[in-house]
Image (cartoon, rainbow over all chains, first blue to last red; front, side, top):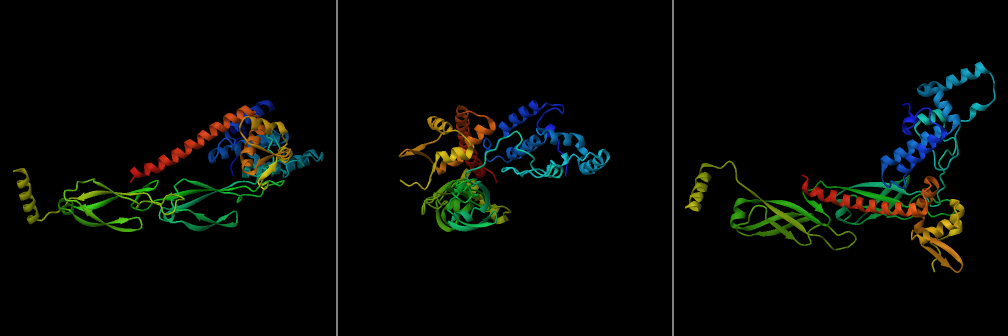
Length: 301
Length: 97
């Protein structure tokens, strides 16, 4: 557990006045407030930090304790005891750092908890109690093949099992909202919502752009030259293709409706684009070299 | 009229400790829709999430109604840009091996 420099967090001098601390806190709170920085974990972390710093520095007793012990905070309790014994005043003022009953708080660093126990006052920030329950955020990691078909999945969110329907065609980074699956509201307020963000990894040979899929298909030189039939993979099976004689390297073919399912449009699919990649034979035998030379001569004459 | 999803404004005023004028001003600014049934005024429960954000901005950051309007416009823009960025990142995967 490391010492936290609260002055540095609020970007103020150690001699800063109460007003300067308040001003610095408010400025940083405006910058990192979670309602102004949605889905920004870094801002959320900074906001917690500045709130904690404010909790200590805007509260005279807390600030004094913090200033007195500073980096020696781990010995604070011992110092405190010996000081009390020396002074023997017993005025009962030392009990002020107990746990505080602040509704939205509680998320403090180990350093803070060990020095102050919990939130000690409502500090400088007024935080109104939530009416609507807290929204929950979850991230679901899936493979591309998982989102090819609509399926159900059971998730455990805050110890509760929730069965959700995952529609085929969901995109990487897409977020869906499930109403009423968040925390309980207060004072008759509605429940919060559950937001699920999907991360879709692709370990297939197909590349996806929305509903279209792209892949390359190896084509041997002779089929490219003379034409013929080949079998190519689609996402969920195989397809027979007729290759025209004289097919060039990089030729694209479009297979309509063989792409990825369209989100929430059952039975609708994008297209599959195949690019032919012609394989040039290597390690030619003497006979092959002879024949290719003959072909070359024929071409050039 | 389905009243199930409607929350009476006085309940919200009491809960958030704000004046009725806060909601009427937001309504005038087009930031929320107040529904009047007989003589009572309500807000759709779907709007509570946004309202809560507005209350926080107002109470915790001292942002006035005009400021809230500006912030919400910018947040909408950020949301749009973030969606565009995700879509572009997904497209970029096409060119990455």
